[in-house]
Length: 147
Ligand code: FAD
Image (cartoon, rainbow, N blue to C red):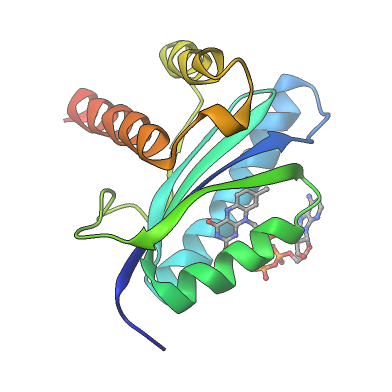
């Protein structure tokens, strides 16, 4: 297994059809599983969602990222999984997060809307770097607000 740090960014369609409260619970379940699995294999990152879409950053050893993304792609809770970028990274953007979660607050929703709006919901117009930068800024904001 190569230990070179890699970063993967993707964007997908949310296929969860539940009402908002139930959807939050479904996402909480995805997050709980992710945090346990990712911590085990040295993967960190961030997950953002709204009613329409997910965006996620995964970082860690290349083989661990590939195995994790393979499972994620098969998951029926989302679809049209679109890889935006995958390659070596100099440092982790989310070093203390087995999976940071963005999407619970109104501010998050507005910011996410900005990403989705920028692309006109056309995933081919979003870059991995752009999604990474936005998730990174949002997580930093939340860390500062919580400090
Ligand atoms: P379990 O959680 O025990 O699940 C067993 C099987 O049942 C899996 O095939 C799973 O896909 C399926 N399953 C479980 N609950 C449901 C449900 N409510 N509806 C339909 N099928 C279900 N996993 C990670 O490890 N790391 C991540 O960072 C990560 N990010 C994700 C992001 C998104 C947007 C989504 C939708 C899923 C993500 N997952 C992530 C979950 C991943 O797709 C797998 O479900 C999970 O890794 C399987 O973990 P497990 O082997 O512990 O199985």
